[in-house]
Image (cartoon, rainbow, N blue to C red; front, side):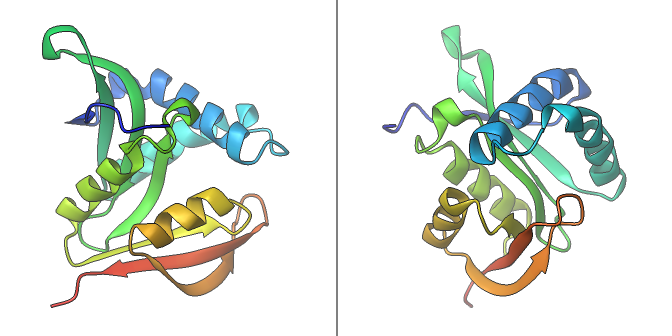
Length: 160
């Protein structure tokens, strides 16, 4: 997909949770169709609450709407500013490759400018390639506690 107009970034609000959950399910079902993400909707709502309680910041990327008003949700990112841990980076499949994920990584980096770290499903090759292109390197291996699938720990540090 070609670059589209830059998405509008706004902070998290619970009113967006239904749309976030729908987007999360669609994105994950496209990335790993063998897993039933529909059954995990409740997990995401609980996870978002936990992230907020732990001090994470969540930014939403919205399509530019009429007259500059926010439009549809394109994606979201959560990052803990102190640790730099990116727990969620999700973009609607219709907008993969359109610059939305790059904008969300930039938003996360603005909140944790020296260091970002994340875990990505090893089988999610598209995401791994994106993170490598965005300056992340593999620094370890693990296992997703929910699915039992292998993960890669990836990190991006700012050189001083």
